[in-house]
Length: 493
Image (tube, rainbow, N blue to C red; front, side, top):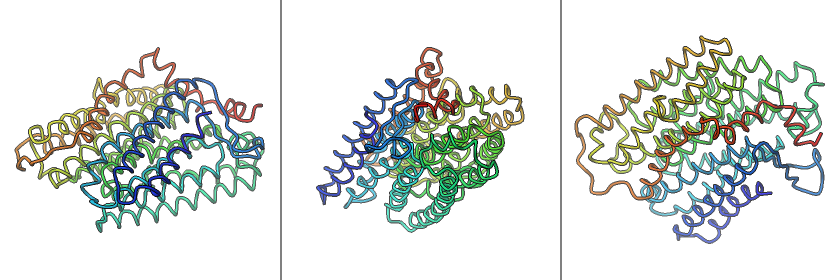
C-alpha cells in the first residue's frame, strides 16, 4: 500500500529540513525536491495501477468504521498526481525566486512548503471526515505563513484576511462534522454515506449547507471569494501557483465532490446550487479580471472564473459534465500555475506587475513570453490547447442536460477570458518596449518549470482521445458517480 507514504514522506521531509538545515538552505532545497519527485513517482505509479479498483489502508489493528482509513481510488490518485506535479514545478521555480525575496532563512519556506504538501495529500487520501479536517488545518496554517513569507505589509494583510476567512470556513465545517457525527455516530465517510438515507432529510440539508459554505470558502467560489484576490496576488509567485493550481481544488472542490457525490449521492437541490454558483463565478470572476492592470491580481480573479467552470460541470451531474469538470481540474492547474510563474518571473526580474509598465517581453524575457502565450491560449479555450477541450465538454454537457442558458454564459465567459488575455499579451508582452533589458534573466529552474507546464498544456489535450481517456479520466468519473460502489468498496459490503 503506497498511499501512507504520500503523507509520511513530505512530513518527514519537513521535520528533517527543520532539524538539519539551519543556515544551509541548499539542504532544504535538495530534501524538498527529492521528496516531491518521490511523491510524484509514487502517485503516477499508483494512479495507473489503480484503474477501477479501490484499495483501503486501515491505520491500526481495528477495522472500519472503528479506525481511520486511507482510500486509494481513481479520484484520489488523480488529484494526488495533480497536486504533486504542481508542487514539483513550484519547487523548481522557488529555488531562485525565494533567494531573491529572502536572502536568509529560506529553509523555513521549504519546511512550510512540505507541510502544505502533507496537508493536501492527507485531505485527498483520507477516508475519515475528521481526519480530513485535521489535514486541512495543517495545509491552511502552512499557507498562511507562506502567503506572508516575503515580509511585506500587503502580504501580512492578505495572510491575515485569509486566516480570518479560513477560520470562519473551518468553524462552519467543524459544525457540519459535529452534526453529522451526532446523527450517524461515525466519522468514516463511506459509513456516513451508508447511514445517511435513514436520517431526517432536513438535517442532511442543513449539514450540506454548512459544508457548502465552508468548503465553498476554501474553493473561493462566489459569493465566498473575498479572501482570494489579495492572497493570490500578494503571495510569492510559486505559492500563488500552489494556491490557485491545487490548494483551492484539494481543500475545496475535491472535498465538496467527495461529500456531495460519494456521501450525499448527488442530491438535486445541491446540483442546482452548484450550477448557479458556478455560472455566477464564471461571469463575476472574468468581469472583475477585465478591469485589472496588476498581472497577478488579474490572474487571481480568473481563478474564481475558472473554478466556476469546474463547479458548473459537477453541478450538471451527468457523465459528460463530470468528465469535463474532472478534465478542467487538471487543465486549470497546468495553465494557471504557468501564468503565475510568468507573472513571478516578470516581477522578479523587472520589478513590476503593472501591465502598463511592461511591453515587448519577447525580446527581454523570451521563454516567459512564449510560455505566457501558450497559457493565455489555454485558459481562453483556444484549440488545440487543453482548456478548449474541457470547456467544450462542459458546454456540450450543459446543452445535453437541457440547460442552454448555463451553456450560453459559459461561452460568454470564455470570450471575455480571451479578451482579458488579449489585453495581457498586447500590453504586457507585446507593444512598445518600456523597460530596458535587465542584466539577468530567469534561471534555469524557473525556465524549466515554465517549459514543462507549457508542453503539458498541449500534450494533456490527448487525454480526451478515447483509448487514453478510458484509462485516465473515465475511472475518475465512475468513482464520482457511483455512491453505492464507494460504500461497497470501502466497507466491503
